[in-house]
Length: 626
Image (cartoon, rainbow, N blue to C red; front, side):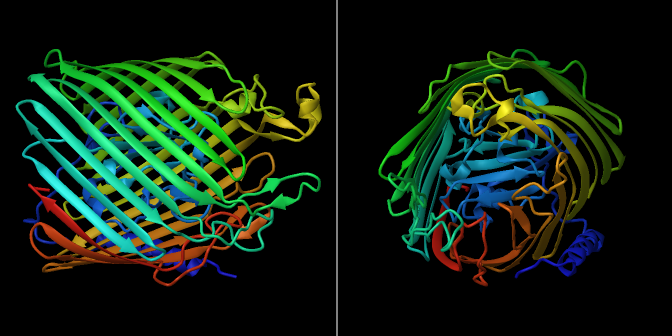
């Protein structure tokens, strides 16, 4: 049985501290400008000014990454674990600071996406090719973004045009009959800006379920996928500081999976049908942003999101979520270094499912304040949600950061958050109960960060207490009197405590760069004392890159600890990925990568299996300044 012993983990933490202590290179080294992010305060803010724990994955890191998908890219960051029912293209979710997939809000350009019936976002339908950057807020986010931001917020920012016309394209082929191709064009002229991208990916994959699984779902056929996406974004700046824009992202996933049908007279599991998924997700919006004065900026966004899932073998079921969202936001700067943000937001949610469900409406008011007062940085957020189903919920967050010196800072954050009951929790026949209450959480965190032009190191300690958690109630006496509830129902059944630590460090010396993270997580059901399913007690990543002339080499290691699920202990595993790039000309680059180089066999979830060793070769073009 594979194990991830302490001999791997203790040196990993020591390596991070050693990396932070390495001597600095020459002070002439160019210092990168701090990125401007929107997720931490809802308004564009330099990352260096934030109190909240926000990480940014920019376009360069996305292109250079070995990741096969958004979810795989995210799990290489501190505080994030991945659960996936098989290999690439299969249903996937991220677990942020030990919370479930239902405790993370996912946004595309400020628009909430995901299934209202399941209460989570399946990232497998979205391609990396459309993304300019990803911002991740780790920690409570309900005071800014409302329901479900208990573990945090993942915001996907799509590409936007600027400057001279630019064009980029990429194509690659790999093992398991895999292929991917994408193209991107952008620019701006005479006040107009535009960006457009298209992509297509495919793979034959392997059987999602391993032989001899617990529930008899294994089918030896390959469970492959095809994913295609298109993204369009444009705008017109009709006066200085005044812009109107529109965008659309349309992604389509066609995949196979292993399942079973239970037909009379025996009702035994029959895994022989070819189970398939048709998953379409679309996000469209129009927006206006304008500076009304040197101190006042207003923005208005009208958006619509559609999440359409059809799945089955010989018979099919459909779950459709449609959201209409209106957001009006204002930012006022009363004095230098201070900002007040106010927003009004309304969302209508409608579902089409095998059961009747009413439309759900949510109206919210948001008020936020940030200030830089010498060495002190402050943030206070408050939000009130009124929902047509579960009523009123107010959440808040307070944060403080103190810059001990130019390169060293301390911070502390405390906040409340909540998760709304899903349409399945409320209305699914024989399970849903309309009187279920939202889940609530209280969390605290403290952190320290140090950085200069070539090195960085940080540590965050956190604790999140959840109550009124929604789950399965087997005791029929706590369920409605209807006989359809004889086998139990949904109910507020448990409490949980999630506590842990995230350590990060990076350093660059000459042509060599190194980066590492170490995560420790204690996620327990406080009612039973048992560890929560699919959560590893530890996870580590280590990456190194080296550039020599036209060559760049990358290597990364991911170590995931053992996880409980379904009454068994899933063994820990380690993955080694390798990548080489050769700059043929300033515009052309050849690439090759070897994923899971040691051909490690592991279970990404109980009874599921992922790909073995996979080789890729590709070519990339970037012109016009890209």
